[in-house]
Amino acid sequence: MPVRHRRLAAASLLVLALVAACADDGSGDVDSGSNGSGPVVAHPDRGDGSGTDALIEGPVTLSGGCLLVGDFPVVWPYGTTWDAQAQAVLLSDGQVVALGDRVSGGGGYPYLSDLGTDLAEPLADCPSNKYGEVAMFNAGEQITVTK
Image (spheres, rainbow, N blue to C red):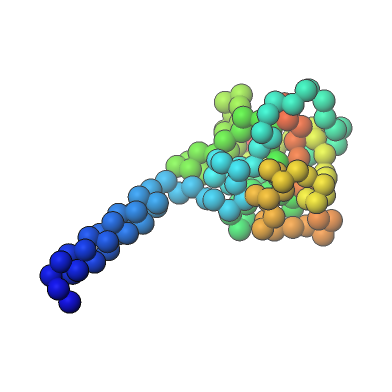
């Protein structure tokens, strides 16, 4: 192999190695089940203040890269994000939900198939319950956190 081709091959390998290193930033973000903030799947907008009347309640766990409330994959209120370093959910009002904390708030339990693509797609590979339902807090819901 001529020297020029070896240099080109070595440079190509170096670029690939740098791209791979930059892709893993070590932040601990979990991409599975996410629509932009680690494993948190949240409403894309504030909504109109309406919602459903079911009580969503249970401990928050992380399973298969997905957040669950009880046995249900969860859609969080608008503005909810993930703190990769603390491995915790950050609610829009500043509350921190650690794994194992109990949460409660208003919402509903739709079937995954009834959700729009922006919410259903990130939850598609999450562990499912025997009902095939998702815990979905109302978009503007205030959540109670119990440590």
